Length: 493
Image 1 (cartoon, rainbow, N blue to C red):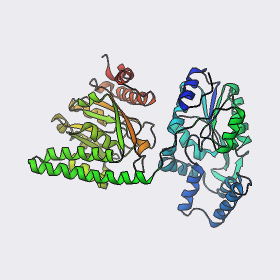
Image 2 (cartoon, rainbow, N blue to C red):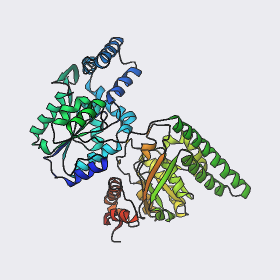
Image 3 (tube, rainbow, N blue to C red):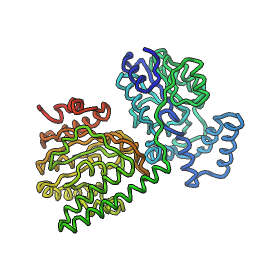
Image 4 (cartoon, rainbow, N blue to C red):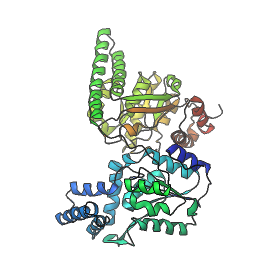
């Protein structure tokens, strides 16, 4: 096979190649798996919290300028930051890494890099993150991607306290290549058959250590080296940047929500049917918001939305998810939301138009009581929109499915309709206030009607697996979608 020059060709090459754990795939972190540099997020967070002494700040600036503009040691700034951790508790960095991943870094994971990782995992390859970064930066990203192995810079810890020193060399430049080779020896890896992905000129030695070097979005120096060495260059799509156009579209979308609500309520008053006006207002608000924000929907299995009444379950990545479902369902539905959302200004319209059910996730008795109160409305012909993960995920990785929606299905006798949202997070990740235009892909599976109390736990796991399989092997049409739905969810159809 010729060398790949696109992500699609790279995926095909991996899947056509040999299987087995003797083949490794080493992924750099900063600029490769994620867009940007995770170290900046750590330092900026400490700076904003006034946790960086003046002396450390000055040393950091001086060494950064020397290592970049003046051509000095580019690793000096990292060693300065490592030394500044001396005397601090390791748990501080572990907690900081988890929080920054959730709030800032998760949304920068490249979607196409995730596809490359998954392709290697499907082939049974040994996948590792190889980076000059520390495990406190890498571990949350690796966990999200299902990567078990880290080849990284290790900080010395004694009795849970940082000494300010590293264990061995910082894995930058030639030391990253050496680290990958040590890992290969310990895990019986065939480096000639293995892959490495990186983006910086300092990665030349690292990429040279394997038979399949793959520069991703390379810096100019690495691009030149790749040209000289005959390495194929892969260009991954950059995460859409926030632009003035996106900000303007988001502002217009907010105006569209208000216009839709007012139009619906006015129509309800004129017709003397407030409920009909509320239904129209909700549909127009959601439809206007997505259209003005530049969001289009590409839906597979749209005919299954006609199953009414039903309990529509969806995965949850973004604040856009309720609007997408509102456009799809159009009318005659309510929703379940966490108690904390009751006072969220964005929920005022939902409270006015769909009378959502608020549950206290920390109080199981209250949650059960609140959900029990929905059963009458469901039996009366109202459908339900619910996110079984319970909260938004910072990445496309699915959380645990809670059983509340499925117990409601048993109590009300309604079918469960799985609605898989592929990429809403890429258009508005958790914590973002700006919508990035594009196409959101949706797959609606056939209704599930065979739920049983005695096997509910297994069925919930099977339904979650259906979501996972759909996200991994996205169907292009109804036939491919039907092939993903197995007997575990649907029984003998």
